[in-house]
Length: 136
Image 1: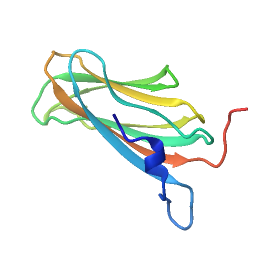
Image 2 (image 1 turned 135 degrees about the vertical axis):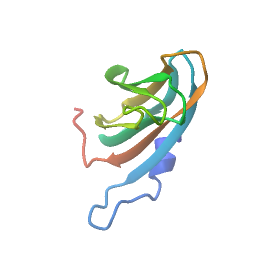
Image 3 (image 1 turned 60 degrees about the horizontal axis):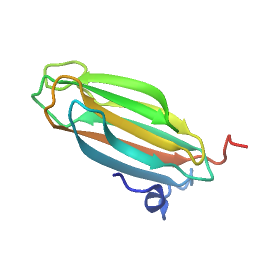
């Protein structure tokens, strides 16, 4: 699985003008025609987190269709569909920004909608800890 948030945060800072901790991690998984978890990690326990999440296919010539599903604390937030290959307009990686409440989980799954062929898919997460929490 992906790196844990604690290892990402240690010593990481943005610029001197915005000294909020920032982290980055990614994970790759072989996606078949069953939903495969690519990222499944708890975010910061004390602060809300702004996450920029990019999901994409590691294939240049496939014509298979893929579905990426984004969950926050077990609730499905977004579904992105794309077709792999150089000749398809929707083969570009899909990016979404989400605010993850303190202590909740971010999960992204990938699914090859066309066949059982195993194709590597990747998810990249840029993490910015916010200065507070919306939780009581």
